[in-house]
Amino acid sequence: MTQPKHTHPLGYVQHTAKQLKDYWFLILLAVWQWDHLTTTWRVVAVLAVVTWLLIWPLLKWLTLTYQLTATAIVVNSGIFVRHHRHIPYSRLQTVQRKQWFYLRPFHLETLQIETASHQDGEPEVQLPAVPLTVADTLERYRRASYHPLSPDAPAPQPTTTTPAPNNDLGAVQQRYVTNRHTLLLFALTSTGIIPLLLVLLAIYGKLPHKWVDLLVADAQHFALPLLIGGAVALLIIAWLGALIWVLIRYYRFTLTRTPDQLQIAKGFFQRNTITAPLNRVQAVRTKQNILRQWLHLQTVQVLLASKAATDDDDHDLVILPAIAQQQLYSTLHPFIDWVPGVVPQLEHLIVPQHARWLLSRNAVLVVALPVVLLGWLVRPWGWLGLLLIPFAILQGQFAAHNTGGSLLTHQLLVLQTGHFWTRETFFVPREQIQSLQLNWSVWMVKRQLAHLTVNVRHGNHNQAIELRYISAKQAQNIYDWYQGQ
Image 1 (cartoon, rainbow, N blue to C red):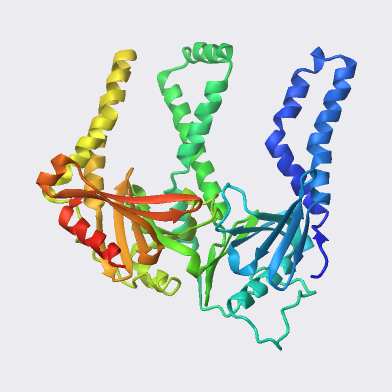
Image 2: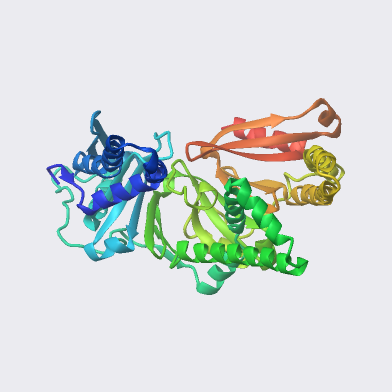
């Protein structure tokens, strides 16, 4: 590809859709004030809205070009301030391919490219509506940058066909497809209902006071069972919404391993394909909320130095959304070979029996003040907040029971934590640890206790993995191991 090229005209549609998504309120504002505007101001308002929502995206599309050279991808953009990005293939962190259903008949997709240097939530390069061959050609160039060709060998050339998005991975070593039964259990135990309920509560908080008073007055005429039934129906609707959302997002989830990278493909309406080099994986995390612990299901994520997984759970790239606990390590090891193939023994970095009550104490202190304020300000129902005290005590014991860790090899550290009824296990290579810290108070010295914090890069931020109230001797051993590198 020797000359800069524009994206497909459907790229303008995507630019416009994004502009409408970000600034839809301008239309509502114009409609709301329409009767109060003079004819002149109505014309100005219409021109302003049309310019910002339709013409501005057109200018963005016209000024966006891309070019694939033998050594780098070059992207030019900007209307008043021009940007010229030159990204060598060897610096690519992740490549993400998104294909909405309306792009499939045209063999188009959206291409997002990230390196480790970006600082915001947006990728360095986003090319809407480009041919499938663009990502395939870019992938061949990237592989060639890791394995340079001889001087006489020809450089890879763009293809003129329209292959499927997944046929240019190179030699496929492993492939895993999530089965429907396990994925359904994963969706049924999703905590996605919580954000939906928060959205409903936020909408309720924005309703005019007159509407709220009218609803309360009408509700007084209904029987209590009917009101309870309405609340239960609302919960069921939110739960079904979360269930359907998870099934759509992880539809036909496929994990593929090649010699030097992982590829994840998923999604029903939008087929999302993410490619990440194996040598850019910062750590591996397995996690279970309390419902999935009862069902013996695990979720596996990788921590990357990119934002390719902002739509995933905790903004980490999910590589195994739901897998039976007894099959986890035997399935994961072929994809990431430095993760053990058997269940690790986490018997060293544990909370001693005499210190477990400290975690419950801290949890109670966190909820004590809000409970007292709630009981004092909202009498008498506010004192129902006292029910949080037993939950805090149990959460502290849950955290103590699930805290653990071990030095599996001289190059691999495994740490386990228990926060908010979720068990998380981290596998961290020593070379990916950014820093390691030991903390203890004067009271902890007498009990021979310490806090161990391991910092790993997580997107654009830091992932602090903290084990609290563990044996000071064991924590010091880990510190000495890290210093010895």
